[in-house]
Length: 253
Image (cartoon, rainbow, N blue to C red; front, side, top):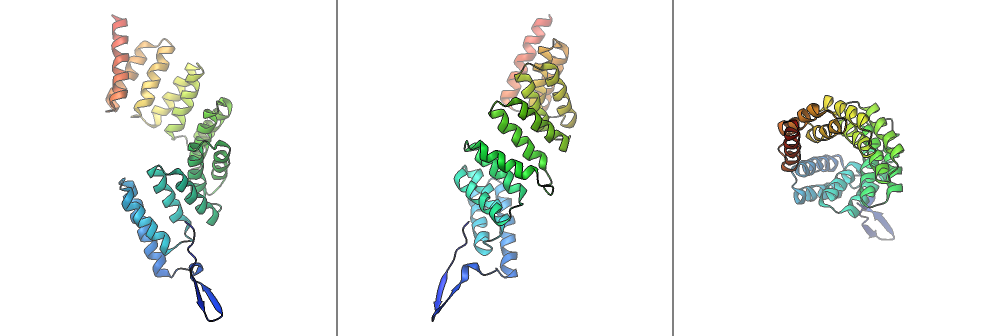
């Protein structure tokens, strides 16, 4: 959010009140309201979150974390233009703010501005202080996959896994990439690795069943589809798994 600059003319001089450093009390109140806003955001109470975060920004307008939080709130609302504005404000105030670079990249990607998104993801991933760089490389993989640059997408997913070998989403997307190219053995192996770190990941079980079917491993496929039913209440996933189980059981009679 832009810093409000209020000019007060006193005789021949002027004071820019908007540039004054907030008092410790105001910063403390701003931090508390930001945390309350984030709590509301987690509860999907976006109007209440916006109220608290806007108040926090007015109390401490140069705080990049508040801009980051406002960006998340606008992103949740679906207002990507305002989300971009606040994420950009965050990185302007704190150029090494890796999380803000990553979130800005996500917004830019959704806006169809892939080249800009890639630059933001790279800025996040290359920051040695970023505690979760695997997310930036995962997002790079997603952007390259959208461009159908499968070699680069695979490279980015693999790098994400190398940084965090328990990041199930990266295994899952890498496996989908293999499946799309008919590399069923690689897809199955990657999905097995995914399930090893996330045993209740139902979409991975479903795609593992399909990979096993493509490899002629019907019994393993049946077990995978049954694990979908054991681990998901999602009606669409359950229907796909049930249909596959019924087809397999009929074929085995």
